[in-house]
Length: 119
Image (cartoon, rainbow, N blue to C red; front, top):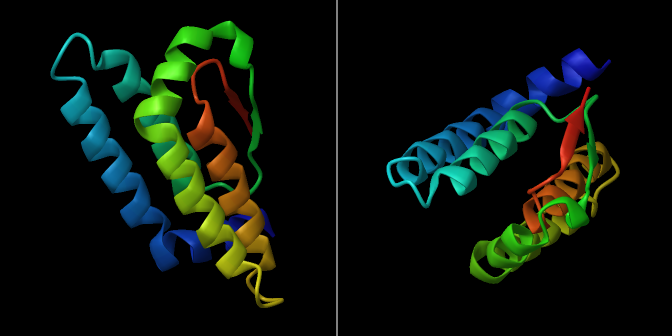
């Protein structure tokens, strides 16, 4: 079931989202300062490509300074954007599974440093 859901997800926008995250990751990796942030963008790209069947476990205490920097620069905007998208997906019964995956992405967007993606 998760394979079919991931295929539908990729067709309906997951591929575009993953490509955008990868491009952003490559741009951030051009500078030495941006490399840690670029690596987190690649993590987001992997989850946003096929989120069904993956679990995200946050560990804020592993890199608190980097998580605070991420949160202040882009994390809160990404979190709110994903949160609105998830709520819009959950309006219909058919969209609830996609909405739950977007909630997963919103949590990862909030504090990606130290987060583990399993699945």
